[in-house]
Amino acid sequence: MWFEDHKENSEVILATRVNISRNIKGFSFPVKMSQDEKENVIGMARQVASELDLPFIRTDELDDSAKADLFNKYYADISFMAEDAKTAAILGKKDGVCVQVNYKDHITVESLTAGSDIRSAYRDAEDLAVEFEKRMPIAFSEKRGFLTSDIRNVGTGAQISALIMIPGIMKTTGALSVLSKRLEKFEWNIKPLIQGNDVRINSVYIITNMVTLGVDEKELLDRTESVLNDVTKLERSCRASICKKKSAIVEDQYYKSYGVLRYGRRLELPEALLHINWLMLGADHVKDDEVSLSWEQIHKLVHTVLRRYEEITAKGRKTITVPRERAERVREIVKGDEA
Amino acid sequence: MRCERCGGPIDGNKIIRLNGVTICEKCARELRIDTSLMGGSILDQAFPMLNELTNAFLNPGPDLEFANTKIRCPKCGTTLRDVESSGQVGCIECYNVFNETVLKKILKSQGNSEYKGRNPGELTETEAPVRPGSPDEEKPQEQPKPAAPRRAKSTPKEPTKKDLLERIKKADLGMISDSDLEEAMKLAAEKEDYDLAARFRDELKSRKEDK
Image 1 (spheres, rainbow over the protein chains, first blue to last red):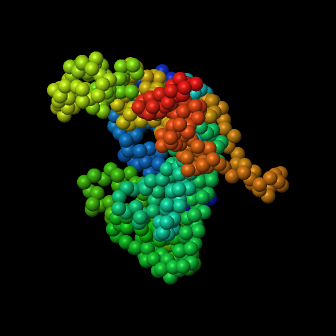
Image 2: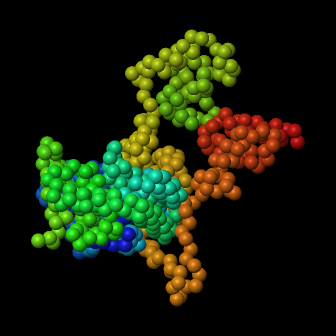
Image 3: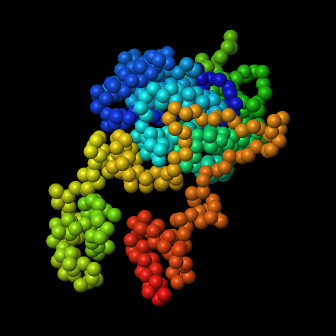
């Protein structure tokens, strides 16, 4: 899967996502569309998918395992795949690229990549968006740009966000405030992925570009590159400083965390993330042949813990089964190729 | 400007203020307030009238409905309240119907309403700038500029419009130039601070009379 690769800066930037939203003239936006209108838009999107030779999937025809596959790859949210949603997904030729039909906007092209390679992620998204723009009458105004259902998105209609894991920054006094101020300068927003008291422990944040007007796409990409490089630089320097000053603690915690993840039988989400944080901190610092854990394994661990369809839809059996199943999946990943 | 009782728009010439509350003509009639009395001090008005107004606010009748649920897009039925609360519109037409609200929301979240992006069907040049040290490029790489100056603190040399208004608000009006006053008056009117706009207008008027 696209997030398992270890790419440039992916030890900090877990994923970079580009969403390009487009709407078709003559139809209300999905939130106000009638069932017939939704069917019409699905028909138009299916036509484009067929011309581009891309797989087209109606979400109301999906079984649970197919839904899980879309969700776990970050291609679709639960509400997107609801029974009566009348939505569809088109899979891109490249892993990490897909199109959501009838979600918040008629067409949302999504491109995901591990690490911070925003230019290739944007290129993939825009290439596909342009194909739709050429084949459909797009809602566009010279004054406002691409018209979207969310006013905050009008203009380029391009929302760029990144999922970051920053244990170094979180364990360094004042570093989060430095990062927030830097992001604010570039008009980016930062918020924890999981709200609640555990945020200082899990260190997973989402940063999002807030500007779609007043800048062109090129400047947007330049700014994004700069933001992602700044985040990586700051996190790396915090990690290096912690590993240097608290070397013994990092080493101890690294092995303890490895032990819990490798052999634990029940794992709650905050606990799992806490230990993954220590693995991330010590990954490039602890050199030992006893433990062989690659960055690819760590990435897989993070995403397996963070996004799992089976956990979200578990309902009644959440408290008993989910921690056990999570621990089982984690053990398998940490075990890797071990005999 | 909107009526604080029913939420409906008020014609600029028919603003009725009572005890610090702005209401429209229709509400004034419903509350049986004689608008011919308006303009004088609140102390000149009969106390029963004040009581009625207070009661109307404290105990709204069953027919009292905020007009921002009545103002709706004729095409998709989205109401002004929907747009104000969620920041979402229902169709393209909404952008025209709720133009003012949309613009305010955009300015609030982005600080800019000018579109500079590409046209449909065009591709963006996404190549990264040439790195320093590259044989083809001797000039050092330009760093991308942080966001456009939106807040005063990031551009101390070029005060924003908001700064101008704040500065003039606090300053002695006699020390402010005519052009700055005119600008401030427009800004205050845009912000719907009509009292402040009127203050600036009166100052400008008195200056013209002096000349």
